Length: 53
Image 1 (cartoon, rainbow, N blue to C red):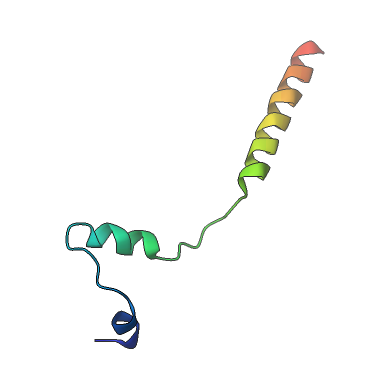
Image 2 (cartoon, rainbow, N blue to C red; image 1 turned 60 degrees about the vertical axis):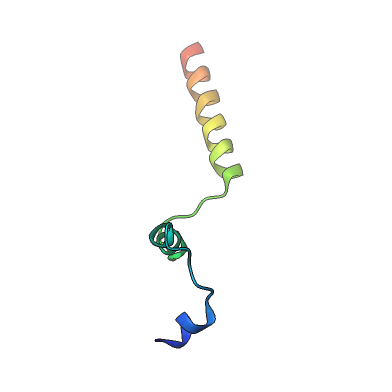
């Protein structure tokens, strides 16, 4: 058994696969929710302005 596995608490048998799947470090673009909301609002406002003109 590796050192890492010895330090971790044992996982429940019923959801062990799900827990280890979500604990993995995923390397993808991470955006703050505020940025996404601001960008969406900006696009909505831009589309409304373009419809007016």
